[in-house]
Amino acid sequence: MAKLWGGRFTGGPAAALEALNASIGFDWRLAPYDLTASKAHARVLNRAGLLTGDELERMLAALDALGEDVANGTFTGTIADEDVHTALERGLVERLGDLGGKLRAGRSRNDQIATDLRLYCRDHARGLAADVAALVEALAAQAEDLVDAPAPGMTHLQHAQPVTLGHQLLAHAQGFLRDLDRLRDWDGRAAVSPLGSGALSGSSLPLDPVAVAEELGFDAPVGNSMDGVSDRDFAAELLFVCSMVGIHLSRLGEEVILWSSQEFGWVTLDDAFSTGSSIMPQKKNPDVAELARGKSGRLVGNLTALLVTLKGLPFTYNKDLQEDKEPVFDSLDNLALLLPAVTGMVATMRFNAEVPRASAPTGFSLATEIADWLVRKGIPFRSAHEIAGACVAHCEARGIELHEIADADLASISEHLDPSVKAVLDVDGALAGRTTPGSTGPKAVADQLAQVRDAVANAWPKSL
Ligand code: ARG
Image (cartoon, rainbow, N blue to C red; front, side, top):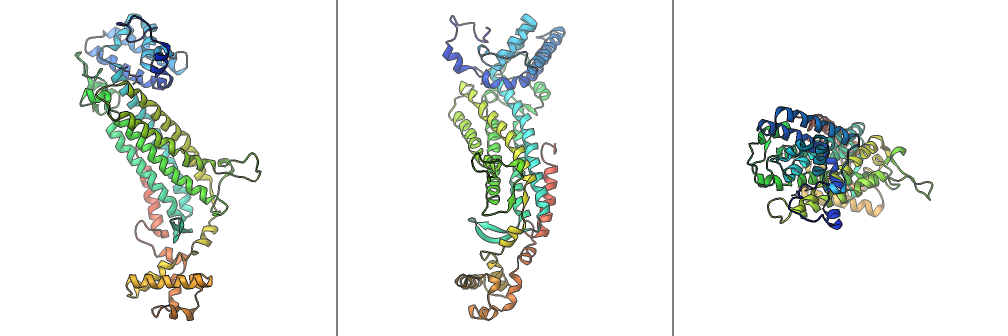
């Protein structure tokens, strides 16, 4: 079996070394990217006079044939191949004989793996962005029906001030829009090609890293070959974006779990996006939302794992770097599973809008309106806050809500109060009064909805 490094060794590898050292068990999915990069490298070898025109044609045809065999599963790597690069060179030599061995000139697995992983990440980041955009669209579609639907807005999970459900749903959308923005920024930084860095120092052969970069869709080659083979910032940054998406999903998941509980009763999840219990026949569980919350743990863990692997590594390539791939694959795989399920759950859940509407004014959530009413009459907010607080205490002692304070009692709470204050103790009125950009009033939310839709329609990679 052809190792790429057998020349100076007398004995074969120990089974324990081989089992530990091999990445073929997880890097095989990079095969299509490795083959694409190989074709670009073959063309450069030809232009450098190191492959004849005829050799290039045979090489490209063999790489295409190998690609088909990889795609349909008739060619696969084995543990003895060590990694995807070794396996594909074996496949090439099986098809081309000695000519297959020419492709390795001027190239190392070190610049190959750095290139393959970048290509994989850039490709899959586009899929991730499409999945995030679909979720934003689902949130926007729900928000559209709930632009003026009141709910108790909360801080500390306590009733704070009334908000509209549309506003709260779009608050989730805003985080995902920032994630789309992060992916666009990330792609710009990831768009450099390490191919041509060789093992670490570049190459004495007349290669053309600029042409290779262009052929592979990168903006430019790396500026430093030593950095080129050891930089994994792009992987760590992508894992950060995945973690941030995961954290946004966990917050959405947590709210859906609360909203669908018996105690809240704000939403009913569709049967298609709920699960049952093996013992309690009545149960309908929000598993999708719980997995949205739960998977954030592994996403953050994958980021942490890679950052710790990278910390303190001397230049340039070290085998530690082989640990870069599984966290990246795991995060992208899990988000590819999770996002469509969360989008489906959001798109199909039904809001029982009358429930949050009824509770919106409870818990004295309109107390701030009394304070603002006093401020409009010229009372300093410091005193207005005290007076509104006294209204709350009055109600609490009697088990009534603010709008139920007897007209006669108002003046005894404060000389500044009179029955006309009751006009502001109305949820719809309080919401309608919130008209500044970004606030919760129906008009401002309708504007926000249009902006969110515009942003997602033009989000990366569509914005290219
Ligand atoms: N399988 C290796 C990795 O994933 C490829 C690079 C190997 N380079 C080396 N010098 N041994 O990082």
